[in-house]
Amino acid sequence: MIQLRKLLLFSLQAALVGLVAGSVLLWLRPQLPATDQEAPSLSSPTEFTGPVSYSRAVEAAAPAVVNIYSQKRVTEKPHPYLNDPLFRQLFGKRLGVPRQRLETSLGSGVIINDEGYILTNNHVIRDADAIQVALRDGRGTSATIVGTDPETDLAVLKISLENLPSITLSENQPLHIGDVVLAIGNPFGVGQTVTMGIVSATGRSQLGLNTFENFIQTDAAINPGNSGGALINATGQLVGINTAIFSRSGGSQGIGFAIPVSIAKGVMEQILEHGYVIRGWLGIEVRAINPAIARAFGIKQMQGAIITSVFRNSPAAAAGLRPGDFVIRIADQPVNDIRAMRDHIASIRPGETVDILLLRHNQLLQKRIVAGERPVQGTRP
Image 1 (cartoon, rainbow, N blue to C red):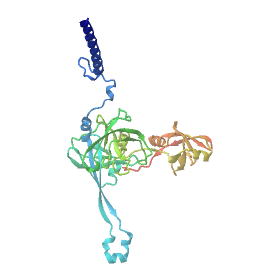
Image 2: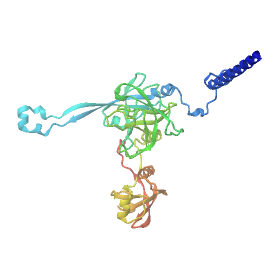
Image 3: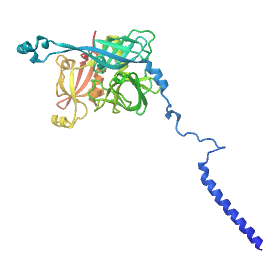
Image 4: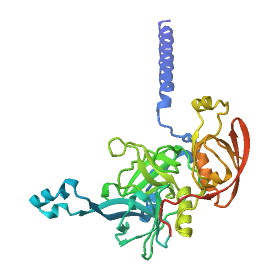
């Protein structure tokens, strides 16, 4: 009887130990490495996984990014006091002679094709007397200005060297917010440098930088000297020309702007074809309609733009447009935004007839205007 009781007690203890051990193993099992089971597959699509390195993109684009050094002579006029006869008699006549000094600036550019055409910013080479271009492979040469377009801050240069590298333009791939981009240029003159970021925004305007603005915003570090350099995507294609930064200190604060490649290509093609950029022009200055303007003119119309002035001998003056007219439509396109309206007028070919819908004294009027050519601010043959 005692042996049977011991046997039952031993069996009960063994069962309890087994139960506890099994529970511990079940609790530890998710933390143990899998042996016979396959690793679970990723649930996210492969297109959202980026490369570990962007060296291939840099190697594809960087040889076509050049350093640009420009020089110009600046004449400093003497202070008016130095022209005083008594002062010049006491301290010498040479004090009143204008002096010249040499101003240098640096920037970047992008070789677009093997013919040696380079895209850069207009402010990089503005008023330059001499321009030097340095390639990544160590070669250097002088450059000539083919044409400039200050209204988009773009310029086209030409160099004459053999076996030139060129960059591939991104024309068929849309740019999205969040896309990885790389900025290549010559910041502070230290040499070619690559920085990485993402597209922070697209279509930025009303920054007061250029007449025609449609910037890519990026947080890739852009510093002085990067202007005119390349903004490329993760495959090494050109998506923009680095142009400006927003900074309170003069250095990069994560807000940089680049001109989209579509705009840069269009400007370059017109400069190569005509020597300058041809844009349509009506000869009016406008302001957006706001509640205060609407109340002042006693109108309920909030869509459109009010004409504030009409240039003499302009297409608008010839068609009878007046200050105070409200522009509602241009060529069947509603006027909802001043920037879009200006861009639309610029895209009209000079000599083309355009129908404009106006509101004058609360009455709709239809006017027909023959577009003129926008006065050119850049170089022109």
